[in-house]
Length: 375
Image (cartoon, rainbow, N blue to C red; front, side, top):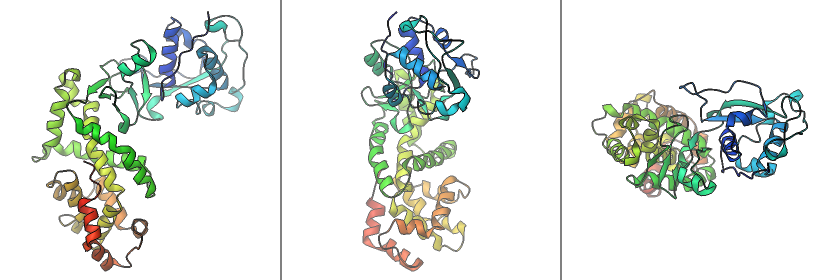
């Protein structure tokens, strides 16, 4: 049997790739797994079956075997498979010894001894968020309607070619794997803003991914409270459009993680922009002139400004009295860190009076009210 050249998808999990490789040889993935010595048990999903959102870490000998079975060089696999570089580190030095290959099998290869290499299993989400790859794109790339799993952060979940939200692989591995984004163009516009937002944040000395993670925590906290907010109309209406799509599946989809993650993405990007906007940081810092933290509440300028950015002017007073929220923790941290504000200003004010004067200046006021609107 000759070696098949089965190319991995960019960002694909190694387990997903190995399953596609086995299918190319006309083998069950379990049969191909016998070529490696497994150092731990394969994790299983809640149904008791092996989950789709798994990852495999190979030692050098195991990587060599996979490269020879795939007919691809190590460099190609290393570029496409995010877990490739982390594989050898998962094994102690005495388990990294190379072993020879001999005998017959796919590509004329066969392990020498009990196994030619070792593999360690772990949940893929420990390395990053994983999603079911767009099946139309996968079929276009591979020539067959196969199932693939890729590492995809939330800001890259929409397939721009087919306007589909690629759902989390840990949630419903056997489901449709996508949501139609055509009824919600504002979600696609939010994703398009991420590259610019990330570049701006990095140029200002922020870690864009950390800012996004904090924004997710903040917004998901709001999501849990939104049912008690009588003025909240944006999310219910957006969820209705998402779940009424023919591709949405059963009514249970309305409560799924996929719908939630898609529905909140515009707000998450808006909050991320605010957390990294120098004008907003100075605005939060100015609230420290209040005599007590509770005073940051109804009169807190930053939360009111954030509410307007989110097209929810009624939200500011609610956020201002939620003293234990992640947002208030961030405000308190910024308000106590004058160095952070200095990094956001070419000529940092010398005292609180100058901070307030700067806030009243036309330039800063324009930056706050007419600045980076990301929602």
